[in-house]
Structure formats: structure tokens, C-alpha cells
Length: 196
Image (cartoon, rainbow, N blue to C red; front, side):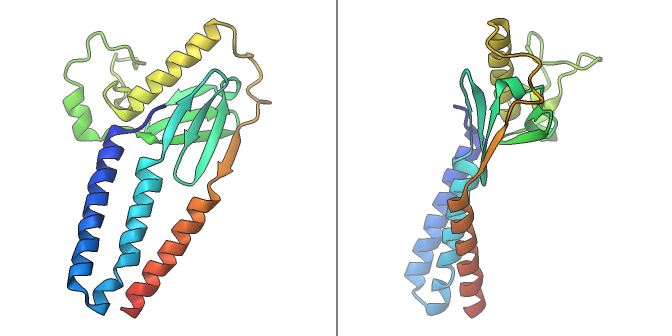
């Protein structure tokens, strides 16, 4: 299972800020400040749903992508390309599944990481450069390496039925509970701030 270390650290920092916000509201005790509690709860909830929970899981049958509001199961037979332009994306004939837990690095991270790339195993362009999203020390590069490595291993072992990508079903399930709680907390936060 792959999780973004950066997202996990950011989630913990955000929760600590939320906790300090709750303490500040409770200490202030005024009716107007209590209206901020639903907003703090919304931020904490979305931090869990958007930063902590997302993951990428690999097994011999499929790649399972858990994003904020949906889980998508991409069977290996449906996969035709692995892309890392803006984030890790699994390309099938009928869909592009973006893996939010594996974003590509920004310009600064790319410049710092691109210094010494000798001996790095990653797809290279015609000029020998590595796409920023394929840098092995980035979330997208590390996750893409895991996916490509497992995919190649399964292909070499003849465990993937080649030529069936068009007919292999990719399953997407919405996280209705996450959507409902997010909507309810958003409504509560807006109402509390409007009344406060």
C-alpha cells in the first residue's frame, strides 16, 4: 500500500491546527466563536478524506486507487499506460484514473532533485531527461515505479491476458458516506458562520 508521506505530515499539522482552534474557541467561550466549530470540524474531516485516507494498493489482480470521493479498481488487463505529467495516472482505453495520493513535484522540488540522476531507473525523454513526475524521490515517481515494476513482473510471468484492455471492466465506487458527511459539514459551517 502506498501513501504520500507529504500528505500524511500535512494532515497531522492541519489536525494540530484544528485542535488549537478548538481550544481557542472553547477558551474564548463567546457565542460568536462557537460558530467556528463546524468549520473546524469540516477542515479536520476533509483533511482525513483528502490527505490521510487516499492510497494506492497493488495486488496480482488489479491496482486499487482510493481517492477522496471514489475508489477505482483497475485490473492489470485494462491498463495500457502509466503517466506522471501532473500526478500518477493509470490510462485505460475508456478512462484516465488520476491517483491523488501521488502528485507530481513542483518546479522547486524538481530543480533540487534533478541535480544527480545518474543510474536512476525511470522513463527518459529523447534528450535523456526524466519527467519531473517520474523522479524516484517524488510521490508520483515512487508510486509509478511500483506500478510499472509490478505490471512488468506480471507481464513477464504471463499473468495478464494481453489484448483484452478494451473489454476489461474498470470499477469505480463513489464514497457516498464521505460525500454526505462532507456536504453536511459544509452546510453546517456555512449556516454557523452566517448566523454568527
